Picture: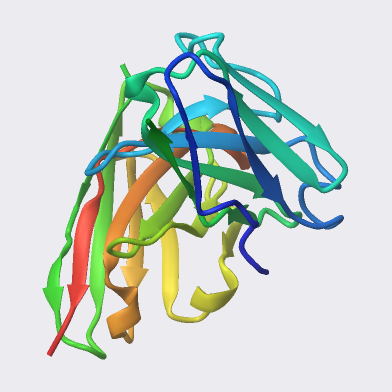
Amino acid sequence: QSALTQPASVSGSPGQSISISCTGTSSDIGSYNLVSWYQQHPGKAPKLMIYEGTKRPSGISHRFSGSKSGNTASLTISGLQPEDEADYYCCSYAGTSVYLFGLGTKVTVL
Amino acid sequence: QVQLVESGGGVVQPGRSLRLSCAASGFTFNSCGMHWVRQAPGKGLEWVAVIWSDGSNKYYGDSLKGRFTISRDNSKNTLYLQMNSLRADDTAVYYCARGTTMVGATIDYWGQGTLVAVAP
């Protein structure tokens, strides 16, 4: 079981759109529609932003969206805002009740 | 509202044991699979273990098998993590987290975490 691959950092100016990729294998992301994304501010617990690849929990801004193609999932943040600056992690079900996290991406708002 | 409160963390010497607890409230505990996830200082999230809602099945991350044991007491709405033979690289904040189904699945709520520091 290897961690999912994410870019270490992504940046953008306020109002811009950014995307974060999360690459796995045919045994995890490629096989299941169980990719979730979490936002984590420093010193805080993670917060669910996207689940089952594309669904937003109640209360999460429409600026956050998810997608998947093959073995890669993506999180897009539209209309970037200063409060979006945080670490973002993907997570995928990998079969047999095992789960994998990505290494995390630091989003910087310029 | 969903609340998950971890306890039991602290400083422990290498080779010793520690048991973490997570008190759950605000939802039907015995209907949800529960997870432990950890985060080493300055590092990313690492999935540790999941236990099904009725406690019948438990699964672990590859690097943890044999040393850690997840369990639950549905009569007390409490999740546990027994950690044995602790090593320096087990130093992390340990989060208790709720799954959205009886077998775990998506993690939707997290506790605030409890810090475990393994040091001589």
